[in-house]
Length: 246
Image (tube, rainbow, N blue to C red; front, side, top):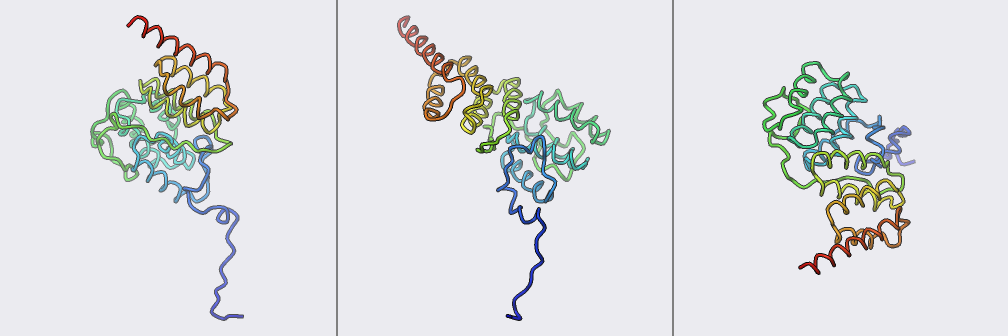
């Protein structure tokens, strides 16, 4: 036996399954955050938020992780980052997450965030500071939304629909469209996502994006396939009528 060979302790089951947070399937994190290697996972989500302030999935997962851990300071810092990133946008999302953490926050933090709920937070110094908050006082403004929806077969479908709904309520139609497009590419058989995306195309008369998505999903089991074909035909007719009037 080589005396220089070191005998390493056998890893626990959780450590054996875990490599780095970036390799984890994050599709179910919003409702069921993982409870192993939480330090690395929270650092990973914090990095994503600091790199892409309008990555709403990472914001939400970070808040829910701290909530399920019972970390009041972490919850407040994560919520503060979300409020700063969205400014006066995403009111329904901010309100829902604040209500979901009401029993975990310190009373003074809940009161401060409640007061800021209806207003655009342009300076984080107006609220109590937090070592967990990583964003500056500048609000998210009109920056392009960066999504991190996972491309997996078992993706949790309610999260994209809920996030898209919040974005639509805030008037961010293009961002909501992007969320639903990524989700539908991952699970083209999901009827609710398919129909919701069609509603956006119909409302915006967006023939080009509708046809592009339809072609990308040509070989996939696309839910509501007939409705897609009907909408494209309708949009084509609208364009022909406009050309005739012109």
